[in-house]
Length: 312
Ligand SMILES: [Zn+2]
Image (cartoon, rainbow, N blue to C red; front, side):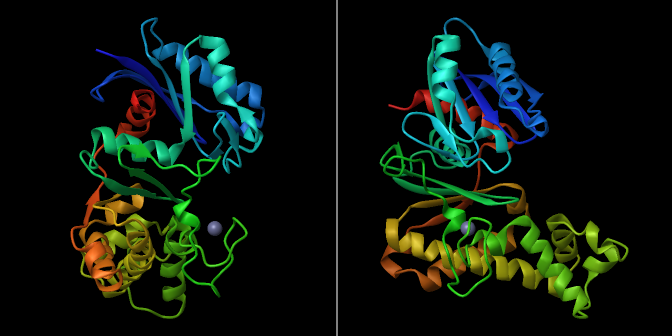
């Protein structure tokens, strides 16, 4: 059985594991990233410790999923939660240190690959995967290959504009989808509605402390039959559906996979996304499409990073 080390690099934790070619985790552990020290040597030492934990002499290689844009040589750019990370060649550093094949990929592209190999995208010909949380990340697998840009990882689905006169996004563009469906922007809708006098159980659930509102509060209110909470999820679903209708017309996927914390909103969100796509995308291109939740669960980052080594 072939094995690989999978490293899921996050702003707070590095999750490391030894993964086999069927996507089973043999062992795993998490380490603090220590990004707040703002020193790349410290973060690199933490990653090396995490690799050493999972390392065995007979592994095929080490897969690393990292925030940011990754080029063909394994150099990372523009990782938002790791300010010390710009233009660092992770592939070269770890290949020299561990004398094994190293594949470095953007974290959500990595998840897309893992979902294709072991999760909800198994057997798909063209699939789009997004993770919905603080931000919106995306990855695409087409004909058994992870889709990348010309030289860089690309597929920054969260920064597809859906409103050319819309609000400014932190990437510098205007009206990006992330600016409507990222965690803080969903919460912002709830706060704005309450300030405008909407009657909603969201207010009662946080005892009037608007700073305590989270997407989960909005889901809890929705499950209690709250109409305002329902309208928020419907609007988030329509935004996503509108964006996906463009991607469906572009790529004609058979599967759209949605993961990340916000996807816990569940059926109301998935149903609205699917309905909006069917209404807006070209009929023939959306006819056989499935919209499904992610299949890999809590260790998706580790399993998927290991899976990077099992690409053709
Ligand atoms: Zn943007």
